Image 1 (cartoon, rainbow, N blue to C red):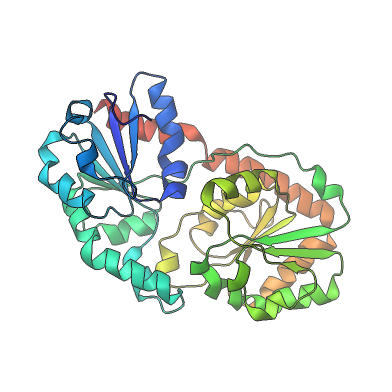
Image 2: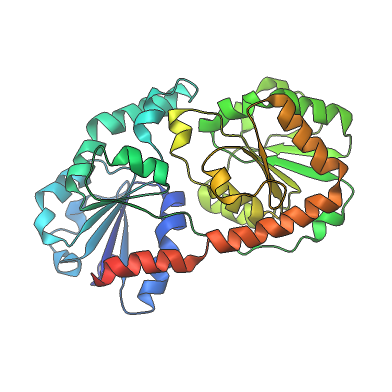
Length: 345
C-alpha cells in the first residue's frame, strides 16, 4: 500500500496491527483488486510533513482509517487538514476507558489507556464521521461518545486446519491471551493445576512468558513462551495445533466490550474452546456442540477440561464443529460488504 499513489483509503497506523489486519487489511486487498487502492502509513516512524503538501493530491477525498490511537504530530495534522479528506473512520476493539479503570489489568497498560482516553480518544471521536466497533456491547458504550457507531465483527484471516492431531495420545492445551487477561487466567489457575496433576498426558502452553503466574510456571509440563509480535504470532498460530483452548472472561466492564475473536483463534489451531458462559462467547458458541460454556467457578473449569480429556472422540467432534462455526461467523464477505458500502458511499 504505497502512500504516494492516489488512493481511496488512507490507513494512519499507530501500530495496532492485529486490529487492522483482522478488520480491514484483507478487505483492502480485495478493494484494490476492484480499483480502490489503500495507502498505509506507519505514523510512529515518520512525520506527516514527509508527505504534506507534496503528496496531498494522492490523498485528496480519501477516506481515513484510524485504529485505537493516533499521536502527535499526526493527530494535530489531521485536525488541521480535515476538510481535505473524505470520511474518517475510527476503529475500536476494546473499551479503553474500562481498561483504564480496571485494577486487574497490568498497571503499565492501564496507565497507557488512561493517557489515551484523556488526551487522544476525545479528539478522535470529534474527528470521526463513524466509529466502528467489534461488538454490540462495545457499541452500546461507545454511543455515549459518538452518534454514529456501527458493529463489525472479526474476520477469519487464516486458513482452518485439518484435525489429524486429535489422534495423538498427548493432549495440548493452550492459553494465548494477552497480559490484559492475566486476571482471567489466574481465576482458573487451580483448575489447570488439578488437571496437570491428574492427567499426565496433558501438556500446557501459556504464551505470557515471564508474566505467567508463578504457580503455573512451576508446573513440569507447562511451557511459557514469550508473547510474539503480531506477524510472528500469526505464522506461529497457523502452524500450531491444540486440542483445547482456554478463553476465560470473568465479569468486568473491560471484558464486557470484547469480541469473540478467541473462537476464531482456537479454531485456527484446530482446537475446541472452553469459554466463559457469557457474551460474546455465548452469542456464537453452542455448549457441547462447538465448544464448552462454563460458569465462573474453577471447579467448573476443571470439570470441563476433564470432560474433554476423558472423551477425545467428543473433543475431536466439537473441534471440527468449531471450525465450521469459525468459517461461518468469520466469513470475509461480511467485512467486504461493510467496507464496500463505505468505499462506494
